[in-house]
Structure formats: C-alpha cells, structure tokens
Image 1 (tube, rainbow, N blue to C red):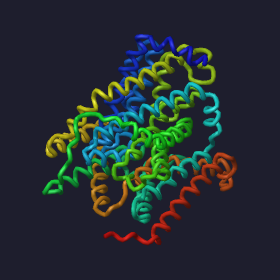
Image 2 (image 1 turned 180 degrees about the vertical axis):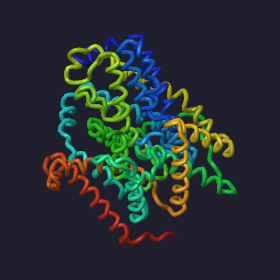
Image 3 (image 1 turned 30 degrees about the vertical axis):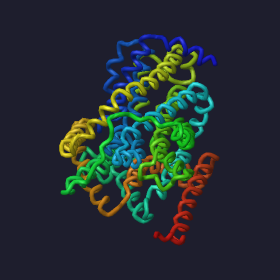
Image 4 (image 1 turned 30 degrees about the horizontal axis):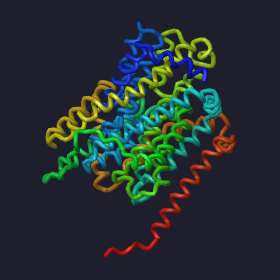
Length: 497
C-alpha cells in the first residue's frame, strides 16, 4: 500500500508522462524493425538520458524496454519476421491469421494480451519484489540447467506431425548454439578462423532467415502467385466471447511469465514457448494451434509482457541484470548515481515510485500508440505482393546490417534463409531449431559449471529442491507428449463420407 500511495503523485508528473510516451513509442518502432532489438533501441536512447532528471531517465529506458518487447510481435504477425526471440512463438498462429485476412484481429489480440500481461507484471513487481527476489537468489547453476531442460521439453509439442523431423531440427539448433567461444575454457569452437563468429550466432539472424527469408524465397518460386486475402486496415479487439476464451491462455501465460521473469538469464523466450505449449495442452481447440488460433497468440504474448515487468525484480532488489536490456537499464541507474540492490528502495524510494508510475503510463501509452500505428502497418502489408516483398527484403537487409554493421550478419541470415527454404520443402519444423539455439548456451554453460562446482559429480543436478522440481516437471511433459503421440498413432482414424 505504501508503494502504491508513493507512486500516485508521479502519475501527474509531466516529465514522467512525456518520458514514458517517448520511450514506449521508440520501443514499439524499434521492436517492429527487423534487427533492432530491445537492447539496441535502449542503447540508442541511453546517451539522451545523461542530462535528464534521474526519474524521467529511468522511466524512459524502462518504457522503451516494455514497448520493444511488444513491438516484436508486429512483424511476426504481419511479415513472418520475429524481431525478438520471444516473438518466435507468436509467428505460427499470428501469421496464419494474417493469411486468413485477420491481421487486424491478430494484432488486436496481441495488443490486448500484451496489456493484460503488462498490468499483471506491474502488480507483481510492486507487491512481490522481496519474495520473488528470494526465489531468484536461490537459483544455482544446476537449477538453471534444469530450467533449460524444462524449456527444451516442449520440443515434442513443437515438432508437428513427425517427432523424428522435430528432433533433427532441434539437434540442428543445438549445433548452431555451440559455435563461438567455449563458456568454460574460453577456446574457439567451429569458427573456422572467422573472428565475427567468436560471439556465436545471434538468434535473430537465424529466426529472420528461417521465417522471413524462406517465405520470400517460397513466394519467389510461386510463378502463379498464391491468392492472398487482404485484411482491413483496422485493429479489431476481441469481443466478449473471445475475451472469455482468452482468459485461460492469458492466465497460463502470466503465471509462467511471472515465474520466468524473476530468474536472471531466463527471459521471455522460455516463458513464451512454455506458455504456448501449455495453452495448447489445456485448450479445447487444440487443432486450431498452428492454423490461426487466437489462444496461440494470447498465451505467449501475455507471458512475454509479464516477463518485461517481472524481469526488473532481480535488477531492483539484487542489482542483477538478467538480460541485455536490463543491463542497459542498470547502466542508466549507475549514470545517475543510483545503485540497484537491497538499499535502493530505502535510499531512492522516490525514483522507484516514479518508475512504477512511469511503467503504468507506458502500458497505457503502448495501447494508444498501438491503436494509432497498427492500422498503418496493416495497410502496408496489403500492398501488391511484388512491391511488398521488395520492401520487406530491403527492410530485412538494412535491419540485419545495423546489428553489427557488417556483411557477416547479412550472409548468415541469407544462409539461414536458404536452409529454411529446404526445411519448408521437406516439412521440417522451425520452432525446435529456434528454441534450441536460444536455450543451447544456457543449458551447456549451466551443465558444465555445475560439474566444475561438484567435481564431476552428477548428483549435483538433484541436490536441491528447485532442480529436482524442474527436472520432474520436464520429465512429465516429455512423457506426456510421447504417450499422446503413441496413442494418436494407434487410434483408428475416423472415416470421412
């Protein structure tokens, strides 16, 4: 209650409102541009905060983070280009709805679910920072390994009709994750002498190549030109009936997002994929998933936006940034002489209360900005296919080039696009590859660090209740998926008239 009362006066602070709107607008635009990640958008704005009031500066950076995490779903739905790792879970059903002429509804569901997830995340951030920070502090390398295994356990669900093809795609992603510098010894692996590969392969390069570039290649090879259903340039929010249907996936997404967000290094990727998997598992319309299910958009989007707020818990309470974006936000605190940690709320309570108020304004601003710019985005993707594809290609190439301002990234993206083209022809799923690429480093580094700590004693992975619980849940997920597939194989198919 004290936190709430302390935050209310800042809701009427002009500079907090202006900073929140500027931040969320820049974040949405940055998240919607391929190659411009939330951390890059925040880094571009960081120099402008040097001379600002500390509260307004922190609010602008946090609002940028929130806006960018939402903005990544816009290209995922409209042009099959997930601009953030977490947005990859939105591609399947979001782009499918776009192809059905329901782009406005898909974007409306995404914006509505992002709003719900953000509000829930803010409530958790304000009320549970202490207890949630204790949970984050209890995580050890074995627990992070178990968390990664839990994230990988959804591969069986994401494998489509063929488990074998899904496992092959997953193995390909794990192989890509080993490229770069060894997390323990620091030696180079599979770089073939190219210094640009020392830092590994950015997941966004592979995602843009697999999803967007392969789509352009498929369309380029379609001489007749598949008939495309155009969408009205209008945002359609879900009606009451659909809202009631989305309550379950949103509850699943926010619950998983709250748990994942407080753990440094987990991020929205695991939360989004887990939310998608569980929403599908508990849905009464499982057959719609992958073909344009509203629940398939609502669950990961709610989870991702819940993470955007709860990810600030370990930063504010412990001074531990869990991602590139929160690390830049930490830099914003330090620039203004603020040290995140247990004493921050006592020494700088006014700044923290202003941050909470600014996040609330940013959430409202996200809705207002979204309503304003999303119809324009829908209008753009309804242009003739030849012009649209040329625009998308130029947007992709320029966006990818700006990541490190080098042609290596562009080359890797084009190679991923060629691989994605053949994967689509052979009906290999993309999501297992993306998930394993994103989680591969977390799983490997946590596994090897755990063995270093224990002197190669494998029992370290069942040495605390967190890792035991997560591994048990992962085992249940895997076993359940295998049993379900086995039953589907032996279940007699219904005859059609």
